[in-house]
Structures are given as structure tokens and as C-alpha cells.
Amino acid sequence: MALLIDIRAPDWLREETLRERLAPRLPGVPIYCGDPGEHAGEITMLAAVQLFPGVAASLPNLALVQKLGAGVDAIVHDPDLPSHVRVCRLKPDAPAMEIAEYCLAHVLGHLQHVAIYREQATRGEWRQFPPRQARNTVVAVLGLGHIGSRVAESFSRQGFRVLGWSRSPKDLPGVDCRHGDGALDGVLGEADFVASVLPSTPLTRGLFDYTRLSRMKQGAVLLNAGRGDLVITEDLVAALDAGHLSGAVLDVFTEEPLPADHPLWRHPAVTVTPHVSGWHLDEGLDDVAENYLRLAAGEPLLHEVDRGAGY
Image 1: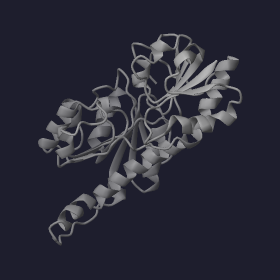
Image 2 (image 1 turned 60 degrees about the horizontal axis):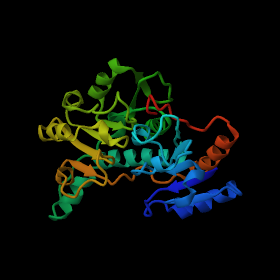
Image 3 (image 1 turned 30 degrees about the vertical axis):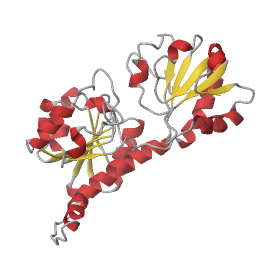
Image 4 (image 1 turned 45 degrees about the vertical axis):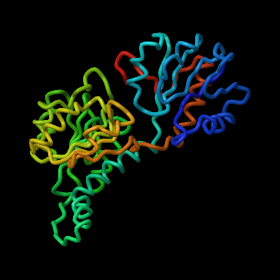
């Protein structure tokens, strides 16, 4: 048995850095980085952000893919991943809180007209706008799992009126929790800001088409820190151009990196960030070693994904 680390994102986390973190927890376990070469047959667990072409097929004894993050849609639907291979994700608090801070920062920026004042400064223009008050602002958080609950609670602590939506019932302090398909349109129609942290599943892909976007409150702002394929880009641009929505803050996209010539970069009502809202894994990395040990011992895994459901 051996562990393979395949990240290929040195600006975020180097394979060798993760190996150094895991080695003390896994004494005597072979840990390979990148191409395992002649050791491919030893690999039983792969730690990765995504499955690169040909990697899963090259590991004949692979039993577990450990996603170094939360979203697993691309992994569970990878046609090269055998059906018997299990998939786990991480649920650390650090990125959940960073996503909450990301959403809160952008909403507060809108309330304080930060972008408007920045643009006015380029012209030396002195023009005042009254800031909006949090207590008179409704924020809807879509998805109330590990991450979404942190987002909703963060807004609640700042005095916003918070609506939460999920497919199954939830109960969070300070949050008006609603659930089920029948409740979604009502939530969207009440919210000044909609923060989506939903996973990508057959039920959520393409959720924000023009019809759904048109049910949002006039002048509302959409924030997407969940998965890129929840939003149909052309429909979002149409809703913005029609004046129904006043803005969008997007951290995830169907194609990443977002091409330099993509129209979202230049749309005046869109803020693009390069998938940075949940950056640090911190204590979650210890679960990688723990899952290796559990796999070897035949014990239940941490945060195992239902590959059929996609989360």
C-alpha cells in the first residue's frame, strides 16, 4: 500500500509540502509525489484536487481518491474512475470561514458603495451615497451544509436578515431556514443578495438559468462561491444587461482558469475572483493521513461521498 499526491498547483500547495505534513502521521508508508512510475501498482490512495487525464487508469490498485477540498463533482463523474473506487472530501473549518468572510466582504462592499467610490476617485469626483444598513438588508444563503451554515451564521452575527435554503430541513440560530424545491423561488424573491454555496449535482447544475434569475428580487446581487456550473453564464449576462440584477460576484466557473477573452472579465456589473474564496485547508489535511490509516484498517472513512448523489 502507498499514497500518491498529485496536485500540480504550486502557487497553492506543493506536493512535497503535503508529504512533509503527512509523513509524521504515516511512519513507514511510501508517499509519492507526481508520476509514481514503477510504483504505480503500490498506490491504493490518491490525494488530489482533480483527476488529471490518465492518472486513475494508471493505478490498478487504487481504492480511494481523497479530494483536497470540498467539491467532488468532477471526480465522482470522471469516466476513467472505476466504480469501486471510493471518494472522500475534506471538511476543515478554515476554508468554510474564509468563504463566509469572502461573501460578507463583498456584500459589505456593496452596502458601502466601495466600487462606486473607487471609480469616482479616478475622476476626482466628490459624490456621496448613503450606505445601506445591514438590518434592512436580506441575504439568502443557498446550501446549509458545512460551508453554508458558516456563511449564514456570519451574516446573522452582522445583523443581516438571513434566509437559508436547503433541500432538507435545517435549524440554525438567527437564520430563517426553508427547504424544498417549492420554497426556493420565494427565498430568491425576498433577497437583496443571494450567496450560493451549493454543490454541483444533477439537481443543481444549470440552476441559475434565465427563468430562475428572473425570479430574483429586482436589483439583487448574485454571489457564487459554490460550483461554476450552477450558473448559465449567458443567462446571467442577459439578466444583468436587462437591469433585473444589479450585479454578480463570481469565484467559480465552468472553465478555470477563466480565459482572458471571456466577456465576464469586462462586464461592468460583474466581479471576477480566481477561485480563492476557500484557500487554506489547515487542520483538514490531517484527515488525509487519517483516511489512509482507516482504509488500511478497513474502518469507516471520514467524509466519504455518495458517488451516486455526487456529495
